[in-house]
Length: 101
Image 1: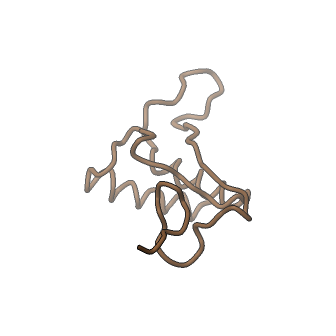
Image 2: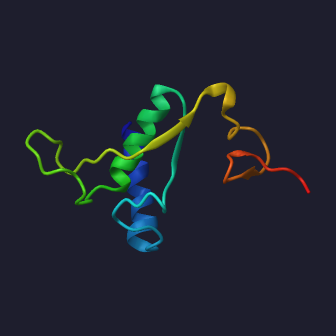
């Protein structure tokens, strides 16, 4: 988790702070997080996003809520249906291997 948190900080510095490619506040139209459907992978994605959007002011202001932390959606597909790790280009709309034309 530590490595993914550090990676999230590096990605934030590049894509949010330097390039201004993504807003500092989470917008579901800008980022879609996809993970393999295993607990360790989902935890890694959550750690990465926690750093990537650190400093966001969207988190609830209620007693007991972790400071500056907001849960972000991480999508997954059951292993047998997951085709993203297959070789070749993928259609990003369907997440299936692209068909040759």
